[in-house]
Length: 134
Image 1 (cartoon, rainbow, N blue to C red):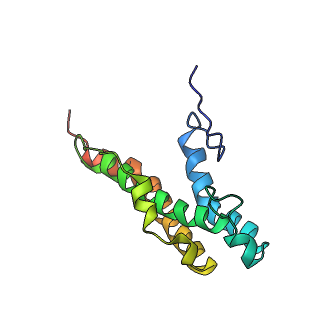
Image 2: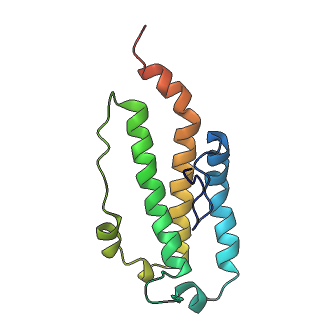
């Protein structure tokens, strides 16, 4: 049996699309509340050398949301899009997530989630408008 829930973040790949949209929409407020409760040193402290700090994880999440939004957009708007693999390790190596402020990170995540949920809300209309006539 294939696992459908991510062990790290709890995301359920077998869940309903509208639940995913609601989760993405609620994410910025939820994460802002949790991060604002921590001190700056807690936000930037890595629990182990190979484990990112909370700030780094949230900064990376903003990148990931944009990346997934781009792929979903291509699926909705292109006929047979080529969805090439992406090297996240290479990408994140140069992002300097640890140098960003909490405000920058939260603004980025908020904008990314808003764009993605708006695109998903509009996706039924876009999919119909780009569908080939029968």
